[in-house]
Image 1: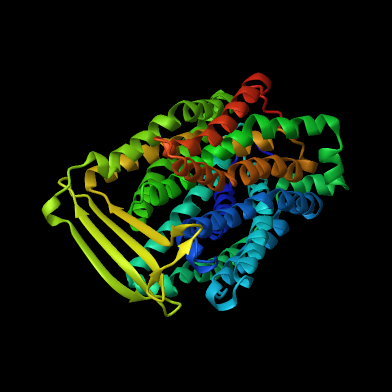
Image 2 (image 1 turned 30 degrees about the vertical axis):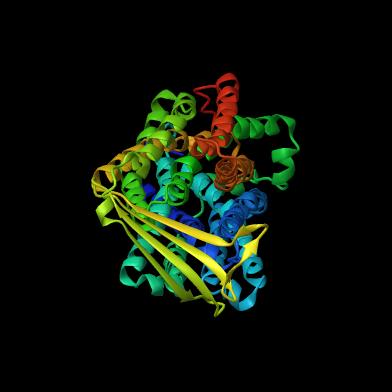
Length: 511
């Protein structure tokens, strides 16, 4: 491999990145629509339990990713990088399209969440094979000494995929009425993926195999048993564990806190209007995405270690102050209400079960332009309030629309979190590729990456939301900060292990 030539590498980057971006889009529209999906595929009796069940199903797709890494990583080291991540692309696209076709819980009962879970598991398996293949493929085309820069383009695809998922959802919401979106429009982003997957497949079909892998294969130096050589060899296994506990574990929780947990926190804990959250998160992602490439490039100059560890340390120290500021910025307790504009509307409405509910809608306005709406639904049966576990069955939905000043304040606070993400995530692909030899690289790097991101990172929204919900029920005054203990503790462990055991300029790429 040339140390200078970058001929054809932009074609490699484009083809790899587009496919990987589409896979992330497919994977993340489920999380982006978690609030809506919780009302479609799960029992509506307990909205909080339904939302937590949705997050758990979302997490299930992450938990299975290491198994996809093992299965497809083995194939990638046996038959090649190109053909393996063509299979993962088609598997991901098919599963995503079918999620958009599943009837609701009201139509087919428990078959709905079961089918969603099965398709999420298939998505997780596909993603487990995709990332390692794309990162390895790009790294093996990149000139020596520039792997951080070139692989950082792959690192942007997860954030770009999330951004596009948010924009597609936002566009669909704006085109359709709220009733149409709630009824069937939420399915459109899932259906669109099949078109994007088809285009990406045609592009990837014309790609060549990685030159490094092709050379190893022609010389008979590929592995006959990648799993055994990766995890049965004590020397190599040491690097797998170091990659996991010293890097990807912390990187995973920082990634999901800065993007997915921030989104769920604003929608569910802060009760901000969903479209406003999608828009401000999209702006923060656009502003932050170039820093993936910057920190990837910088890691070629100064080494991967201190950039990644720096991102983790900043997250550990600043998460609680950041989220406290986010919450306090939009809390109506800190705003002056225009009492004369407060309205309360009480009405009886027929629900989907064809019984009547009492609906109380309260609208408030504040001096700074913030608006507040609370809809309390009191469920009735034969004219009397339904009692569950000794308590009236009442659902409360709060929506806050924030003013321009608060909107920009939140964009800045989310952007700062995205910067932490770019520091830990920008150099990680080059870091992992350089730890393992060509013949077992796909397998060896995929497992720690997907355990760190799939399990430690993927479980974060569900675990942290549970901590917040539980703390709120117990009356903790700063309940909204309790979910942050999970990423802070995990990142702290990873930071200590990484600082002690990872060498800063270990660029032995085992070519």
